[in-house]
Length: 73
Image (tube, rainbow, N blue to C red; front, top):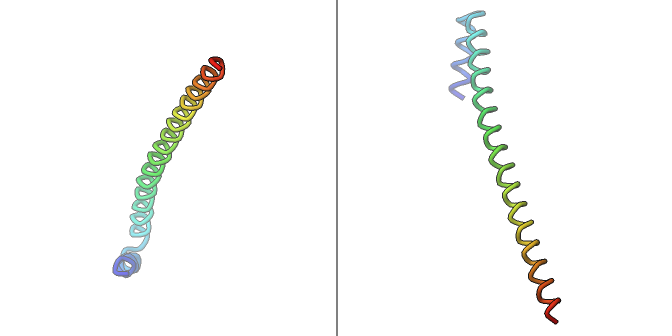
């Protein structure tokens, strides 16, 4: 709440320069948050691909074991 009051006072006393500073600050904050979000999405996508590959290997191995077991009977 203190930040809102501080921004309000800055806008009342600073005029257009305060608005410009607020806009620049908001832009920098948005870029930082967007960068963190993109990093998290990339990590999640990488983990999903790794999990899919492990599942495919497990299914292939199980299939081969079952085929070997069936062929011996």
